[in-house]
Image (cartoon, rainbow, N blue to C red):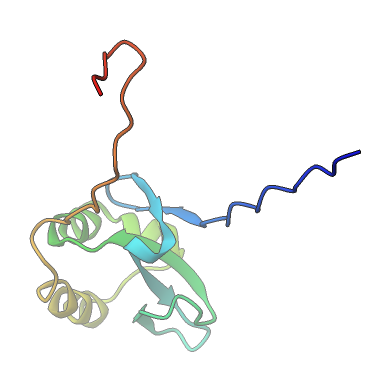
Length: 116
């Protein structure tokens, strides 16, 4: 009698949604903004700081959209002060204009004919 070899478990990758563009991405591809218990709003680059968090893509357009439409205020359940917004805008200015998604290898579609 042969034993069935157990397939290795595929590692779970947490996903989060950008509050501006609503795209779901891997947690590591997004930046977390935290409203701490002290009342501060800071960028949490580790993703582990205590407090209410919201996620944004690593591109300036999402940050500007979040500022314009109040997405961060809603997600963090607070009203951002002018000083908080200024500090976040300074950080957003350091981000690239567009986000380069890593290219995933594509498998041939069943309808395509693959020649050897």
